[in-house]
Length: 112
Image (cartoon, rainbow, N blue to C red):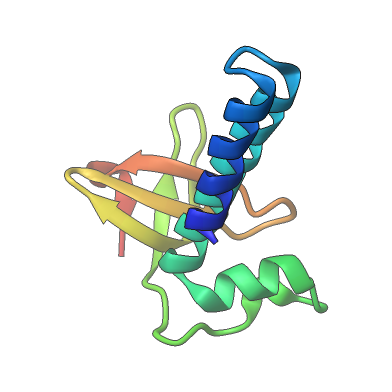
């Protein structure tokens, strides 16, 4: 998919020009495609369920299971979340609750 989106961008720039509105749209399509592929690589179960949206989709277990933690954002108390990925001293979490918001949280603000 990524190569297809990249080829589409390339051909659009060649045909319409690098500064065209069509090229801008093709760039957005490429960026969105890369983002969706990154999300799919993080967790295929989360990706599918977040798009299919069955009842209580966020509570379905993934394979492999996500680590469940308490995460604290600045200005808020600790809140339950599942770990999507870890990078350096930061943890990408998705919070339980109505909107299932995501945030990069410093590892010192994570409790098991």
